[in-house]
Image (tube, rainbow, N blue to C red):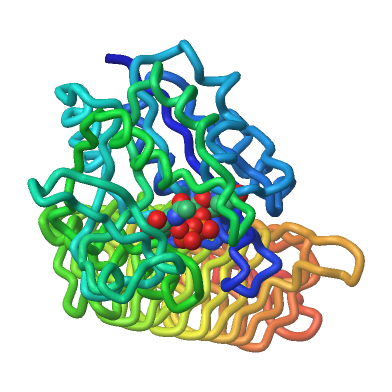
Length: 459
Ligand code: UD1
Ligand code: CA
């Protein structure tokens, strides 16, 4: 059977108290609505239809290319919202799955199960329910003596006896498509709220003697919907533990999962250990046998195997295998550390490549630079890459030795095996095998190889 998916996301989300539309608030690094779109991916035969209204401009910007968007205006309730999708969906598929877009923990398996039950149902719809002691304003499921579903009653309309019912309406339904559209148009406006309630459709089916099936969630956590920032934090924590659990199952050691914050989509290799208070955000890939953290933030970066990164911040960086970073290092956009690099405390690297085996042990700034293999960057070295107007590049050859506290005034080229004396301010290119000292630095001798043996005086 073919299935269409309709997600409702037009509501105001008043209780979020935010200028950002509710469904765009991030959960594990992705907008709330991304998660449900991901979960329905495998079950939808057509592009999902999302009903938008409040904050439509921002929401549609995010949804562009990911879903069909339909504008609901004015917002007259959940049944009215589904009706807006009619012209897009009617006649295309056998089943229509309708779900509210503020429940990012619902799993693909749950949607599949709901559809499987509806396929076998002689009646027109199957609803998803949850047993919970925390009713949170959810509609209550009324059942007849024979336990079949009778109706959904909204909390505001429920009697005190009905309020004690523990079976709740999650807000996810699978309909027979042919029946759905006719029934929607029969729903009466709720006199009190002036809205058309989708939940009233259950009573309509029952009145027509058509059986309504129910699927009850095994994991009640999946039903956590977000109405406020308190729920947002709850869902974030639940999503975090779900993500962390998957990494541990895949062979990653998380010393303290509760303080390990890994965004959805992050990849981590086997036998890597993540220490507490570590944040892996955005597009991050980490190889095997690494040790990351504690107190580390890595965003949009690739880390290859056998690396260690301690108490550092990396963003937009690429780190090859066997690299050791930190504590207290900062890698910014375009930082590329090749195999075997050692970058110690208080270093900053931006838009630069550190060749294989480069050592940069202590408080240096390297920006817009290329550094050849095995070169040593002494403590306090700075690439002076900005002249107040433009950025300039620094190129350093292989096996060079940059002395402590060297200022490299870019644009600048330092040759292979060249050396600079401590405190040198280098303003002119340095040929290979040359030692320069002073301020501004002047060449004082020609060197052979990297041994520093004097061959001729340059003065
Ligand atoms: C709804 C259900 C309730 C259920 C609960 C689960 C109804 C009448 N009630 O209540 O039984 O237990 O969800 O969370 O359906 N929306 C629109 N257009 C509208 C109104 C709402 O698109 O005109 C969207 C909202 O963006 C939201 C969803 O529909 O994603 C649910 O609306 P909301 O106002 O949150 O309904 P609840 O009062 O929570
Ligand atoms: Ca809600």
